[in-house]
Length: 210
Image 1 (cartoon, one colour):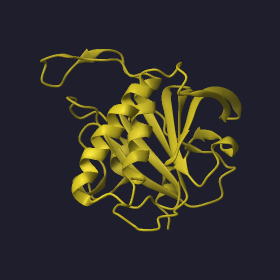
Image 2: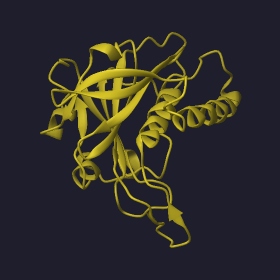
Image 3: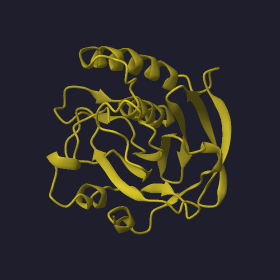
Image 4: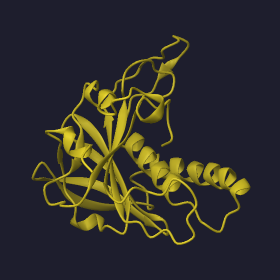
């Protein structure tokens, strides 16, 4: 996932739940309408921050491929929870960090989709160039959620309809919006965004079971 240093995963504590449980905001996943597999992905800190967990992802369905697969047809939906943060000083006290917004969630979701679905026909040597180019485009789109690149979509959050901004591409879909206490992003492929809903996660252990 693009962004700051990863707190979860191999670089973090042995227990993958630790960074999630240390967060000062609620985590969101797909609601009870989702009957498939759930799994942890990563929890991380924003750039130039220290200690605090600022965002994280929870996966649903099949885990996105981590490397090139010639016929990658995995189906998944990933929910990205982003803490609401006001402008604050960076960890090294050399600058000011911008407040998080729905655009932050859109950017993290968009870059997550790119990392999971890069075109298989690309030579490995060209992959980073492609990712850099597409990530720049994803940021431009995320920075203009009211623009023509996005469509409105209403989805339930804790049972109540909430407005989101939604876009599709050849790689999958991305959406972004707000939820009580946090900002929400999501991305997926092979799972219809129109049929999902979000809710707070009462027990993260559900995401650690095989």
